[in-house]
Structures are given as structure tokens and as C-alpha cells.
Image (tube, rainbow, N blue to C red; front, side):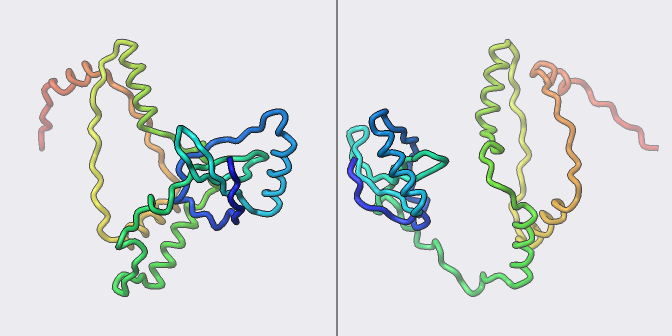
Length: 197
């Protein structure tokens, strides 16, 4: 590894990060590791280095994190594709003050501390549950998902979000999983007509 320079951590656009790795020292390198870690923490700088991994040269950023160092492989500048429309503002699309206030209100009502453990990969969890059900000999039925209508009016959507956030949420009871065979039987059963009178 060859350290090329040190840059301010807040100057690095996360768009350039590709993959992340933990950096740990070998026994004989612990003192040098701790010295570099402390110096970067105190100064707010991160190291930009050149490294060879998987038979390819990479530019990496090494930065302090939670009493250790992390290494992030970086995309090269030519790998970040420009998008012609990105970042362009048009006068016709400029929001009014009332709209800005409403959007700020929504952000404040949903503001929270970043806790990555709160976010779950629902696709992976569903897949694991389906595999477990198959292994247990259960038949798996496809669940029909309702399609959400596209948002037409952003202001109305913001007002609705704020109104829903300010009301205490009435949690829906959990839906009971119905084996596929029972679901088919239920679907075949004749429906009773209600008499209107």
C-alpha cells in the first residue's frame, strides 16, 4: 500500500465509495496503526492510498471509525457517469414558501437518529421464511400485492403524510398465514348472497 495524500473527510463525496473493509493491524504493526488512527481522528483527515487487490490496482480511502480504521475502495472519476438533467433547476418548478415550510415540517416529523439495525431486507427475510416453509413440507402460495397509485399532487401527499404522522398510528392486526390448500378451498367455496330488504 502506498499513501498518496491526506484529504479532509468531509470533502469526500460518498458517491465515490465502492466497497468497505475493516482494517486491522498485525501484532508488530499495532503501534504504527494506533499512531495513524489517532492522528487522523484528531485532524479530521483521511488517507488516500493506492493498493493492489484481486490483481487490480485500486485507489482507496482509509478513515478512522469507532476506534479502528475502515478502507473504502473508490470509483475513479471516469467511472462516475454524468447525467445531463441532474442538478438542473427550472423557474417553473421552484417551490413556493408554503410548500417549503410543509416539506420541512414533514422532514422534522420523521427525523430520527440513524440506526442501521432498524432497516431489514424484507425480500431476504421473506425468501428465508419461504424456504423454511418448503422444508417443513408446506405449500407456498403467491400473495397478491395491491398496486399503489402514483403521487399526482406533491403538496397533497405532503399534507397527508403530516396528518397521518400527527395521529396515533392504529396498528393493523398481523395477517395469519393460510396454507395454499386452505386458500384454494376458500376460493372454491360458493359465496352466499345477501338479501336486500
